[in-house]
Image (cartoon, rainbow, N blue to C red; front, side, top):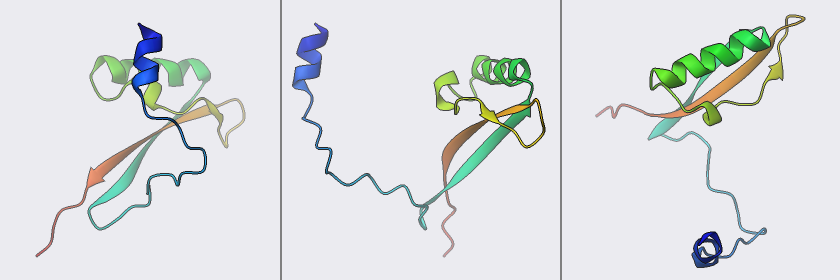
Amino acid sequence: MLRAFLSSLPPIDPGAPLPDRQPSDAWEEVRVLVISSPEGVRETVHELHRRGFAQVGAWSKLLPAPTSGEVMSILTRRRARERRE
């Protein structure tokens, strides 16, 4: 079943350009940053998931934070810009 699904997908072209991810007049990126101990970051990310804020997998892996012994994780979302007329 998985093989049938995968074979139905279009082939991947490694030379194809990546989609445009640069902010535009229509949208911008918003980043949410959690900094704490590894346990504190994981707990917060899971709590935000339980509250429906973001999927756990949408957060970055744990990265070293500027403060010794702490780590951070970043969530990037797109936000539609308000139209000004």
